[in-house]
Length: 208
Ligand SMILES: Nc1ncnc2c1ncn2[C@@H]1O[C@H](COP(=O)(O)OP(=O)(O)OP(=O)(O)O)[C@@H](O)[C@H]1O
Ligand SMILES: [Mg+2]
Image (cartoon, rainbow, N blue to C red; front, side):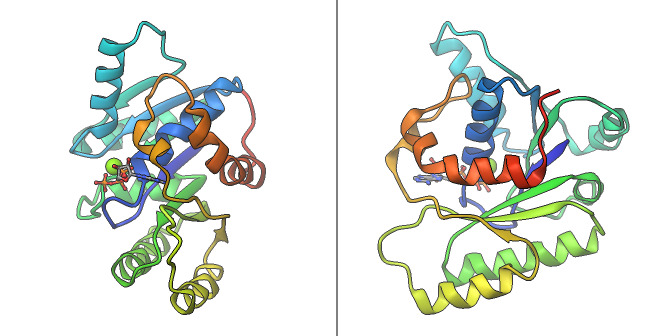
């Protein structure tokens, strides 16, 4: 399966949740490869850093694909076994991202309840529609602090539910700033588990 973590907004937790989701399912025995298509290559750099800091053998590979490689790369994906977790950049001006969305089975969209992020999330929804994908969409309210404006959030929830599934919220907790690419962070998993289990279950992920 192709599982994209994307949103047109920076800093919403795409890389963080993609990494911890990969850790979570890899430790359960799912076949996982993580693909970093963000030109910043945060995830790939994190993996390189983790490899220099810790002895542990990784449970999955992290590879980077430039936009030039993406078209070629997507051809090989057809009929492949296992799960590709793809970490998107925070901007969608690269036309090569469109075919990835088109072929995706699942798109996970982390967001926050502030006006700017909601507008960007709306633009990302338009992009997903434009890609004419059959992917299942999950909206993940992330980095939730005590003080959410419930008038905004209720309004947003109603709209998002027209386009996909709204998952439980993930709070803003320091554990997510301390994750790595080699193993689960138990405190982060504790918060993210209801969201991850929902994606596995409703997204129909199989161990293969
Ligand atoms: N639930 C959370 N609680 C606390 N911190 C979080 C949480 N989720 C993400 N963060 C932190 O927020 C910051 C941004 O997260 P991340 O890099 O995953 O966002 P991104 O969407 O990938 O951003 P970009 O578009 O720049 O790639 C990071 O410092 C990360 O540690
Ligand atoms: Mg990122």
